[in-house]
Structures are given as C-alpha cells and as structure tokens.
Length: 196
Picture: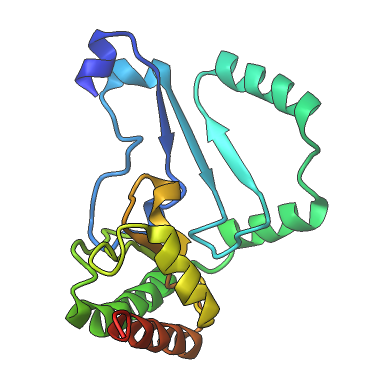
C-alpha cells in the first residue's frame, strides 16, 4: 500500500469475500492513512449472505468518486428492486449468519479434499470463499476437454482458463452437501477411468 501512496495510484478493494475467510487476515481496506484518499471499497451481499443473483452491492470512497459513479450508474443500469433492497437490509441488520456459513463452507471444503485429494487434484487449499481449482492437467492439458467430459457425466465444472488458471477447473462447493458428494464421486469416477 505504501507503493500506491508513493506513486499516486488508486486502489479498488473488492471485499465481496472478506467475510468468508477460513483464517484471520486483515481486510484489504485497512490501509495506511496516506492511501485512503485514493481508495474505493466495493462489497455486496452476494457471497457473505448467500444472495448471489440479487445484485445488491455498495461502494465507498471519496465523495467525488462516489458521486461520479452514481451519475454514471443512474444512466447505464436500472436501480435495484425494492424486494432485493429489503432482503439485503434484512441480511445486514438481522442475525449474523456469516460464522455459520463459514462453518458449512469449511465442512464442504473438507469433503472436496477427502474425495479429490487422493487423486492429487488439490494442490492449494483456498484461504476462503467457496471455490476450488483442481489441477486436471495430468488427465488432459485442455481444461475445456475435461470440463466437457464431466458435463457429459452430469458434473458442472467451469474451465479454469476463464479465470486465468489453464489446466484447472473451477468448482463451487456452495451447494447442498449430498449434491456435492454425488458430484465429487462422479468426478472421481470419470477421472479414475480417464485412460480406459
């Protein structure tokens, strides 16, 4: 952050996943005072409150930046619907569900590791969130080929190439436990039978 201050660089801190960390790390917005006048922080209820698709978020930063962004947004997209606003308000002001959600996600991650770990697919454990990026290069260097074969078996996996990790897949473990277990076991079967 000192580098940004020294070079007059703006920082946009996406804190959408900040509440879903599996270990304690400082929030990206906790920066040195000299940077705060060039810091914009964005967040949403999408991840921490399991409200993907509701499209409710916020931005904070210097007033001039926020005013300009608001002016642009008001002419390029429609406003957030009332139902979504009320739901977001209830999430933010109601009982805190984030700790329970993190516990569920840790359990689901452990399930992923127990099934995919023995296949050597998980090289790096995520620090938070609800995605893993198994390395499938030993089955085929083209992650799209692997994703297509899994899709034909009923498992949805997004090629990692779309996220800057070619040779990997992006899997979400924020699904119902039994559905996740079935998908992982199917994936393990498909990959175990890859060369046959």
